[in-house]
Length: 138
Image (cartoon, rainbow, N blue to C red; front, side, top):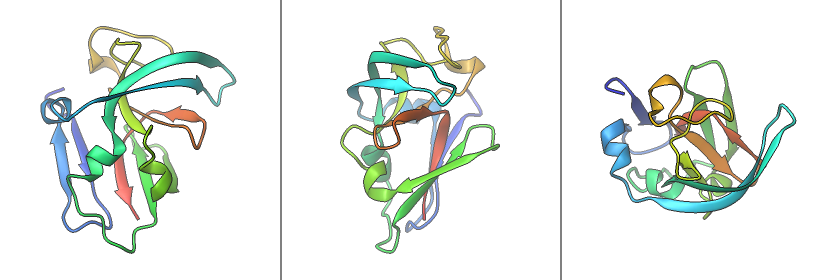
C-alpha cells in the first residue's frame, strides 16, 4: 500500500490526492445495501463502510460547469461515468469494508487489502458496485 494513491482530478480548482494512510483517516460512514454484480450474482443485506463520495469531493472545489463524474478502474482498463448528483448521493461511498471485513477481489475477503483494489465505489443509482478508486469531475 506504500505506492497506493487516490487522485481527484478534472473540473476542480486544483487536483488532490490521498495516500492509503491519509484516505483511512477521512471520516467514515456505513451504508446498508444489496450488491448486484454484472456477472449475474447478488449478495443481499451488506453493511458497507468507507468514505462518502461527498467527503472526498469536500477536499476539492468542484467547478460549477462540472455535471458528471468519470471514475477510473484501479487497473486503468475501464471507466464508468455518472451524473455528479448521483455520485454525491447520501448513500454513495468508496467502500473498503463490507460486513466489517477489508474488501478484496470478487466475493473473497481478506484481512489485508494489498492483493486487490482496496476500494469499491458503491452507489444505488447504477445498482451495482465498481472496482474503482479515482473520481474525475467532468
